[in-house]
Every structure is written in C-alpha cells, then in structure tokens.
Length: 80
Image (tube, rainbow, N blue to C red; front, side, top):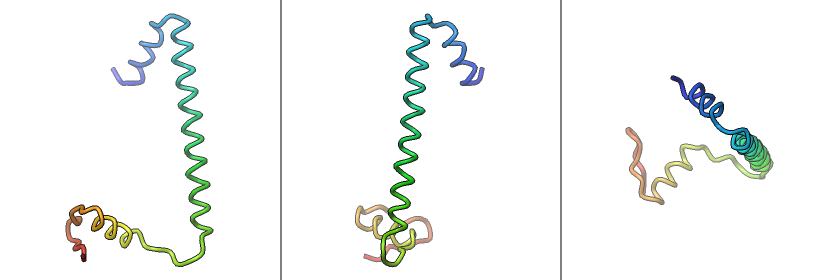
C-alpha cells in the first residue's frame, strides 16, 4: 500500500471528531508552509536589492567549510 492510500485508510477509520482535528492540523501545516515560502521570497528579494558585489556560492561554501572545519568536497581544496 502506498503512503497516501495508507493515510486515507487511517483517516477513514478515525472518529469524525478526530478526523476533523487531523484535517485542521493539515490545513495549519499548509498555511505554515505558505507563510515560510512568502518569508523566503521576501528575504530573497531583499537580498537581491542589497548594494554591492554578488559573492559566488562556491566562495561562500569554501569559507564556511573552512570556518566550521568541514572537509573539502571531493576535488576541492580549502585554503586556510
């Protein structure tokens, strides 16, 4: 049985009150996900509006890996 079908079967076997509570939680989680997406979009737009030169991800990753003592990815050397 796939996870969706299993979840539906469990929902069908709940009392009406518990099923309503589960549906309410799912609705809350959906709303929370939308709020998180909106916050991410606002942060991304604010970042794009910042003055200055863009820093390539590879450079940021190298610096963070070195700062937090993560091993370099295969084929990459971290200068310290």
